[in-house]
Image (tube, helix red, strand yellow):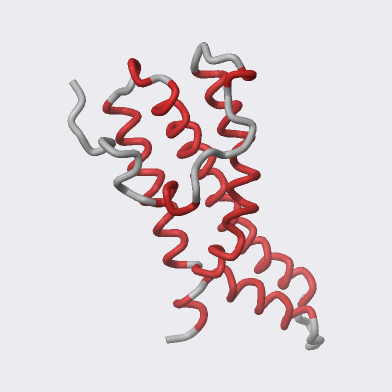
Length: 148
């Protein structure tokens, strides 16, 4: 099995570097390399988008226990699964998770401010969850319980 199947993101990074280093007549290697690199950036952006939503819903779950809903449960579960699938296909993105989560947390705070009555001063400035917690399908405790 090749790198393309094992780690798509890393494959895009390596292939774009290789393409930039070659000159074949008629091959637009610089733009081709940029297009391949953009595929990798898209994977990273998609991951960040899923973290934005997941972190926002985890915050709402923690801060508004009286408003918990089945929709929040489903969103938390589905966003986690999307993240895990992306990381399965592009495991080298795991090396960037701290940075991606830090970037995503600001968007998650904005989502919470827009969707709730929570004041921004009442929100944690830094992400209160570890990577392990964020990716754990059973976190927070009780997330899998049926809600009415």
